[in-house]
Length: 190
Image (cartoon, rainbow, N blue to C red):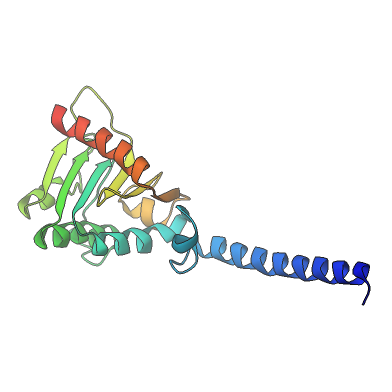
């Protein structure tokens, strides 16, 4: 086989491999969450969207070993719907606290209806409001000082089950350090 045919064969195999990889990336995006075996091993930023947020955050909360620090616009708890996704995440935070994880949450106080604030506090979780003269619109989670989850999703029925939402999981110590300092600054001022 001549050199030109070998190059053509390598080129065609490369194109086919690229198409196959592209199809897998499209399938990952359609599912709304990157499977850990694919993305976390190969990337420090994992996109999640829409219905992919709940399973990713639920899993991260269950695996937290040292800390979960949250700055959130809205965390809802619906006592009439104990198996709702937002209630499961709130209960994940309580479970993490009960196994010794340092769970601290800063919430905006704009809405107290169906607010998880009292439920979390009654179950031993450290929770603070941000202050009346500021709106905390952030949706930030820092886990174990190395994982950051941020984006647009609130812990609410619409945020978890209806809205179009985009978020990212960032696995980078320097980014986690930055947002941990951000969290601590707000925590200490309130």
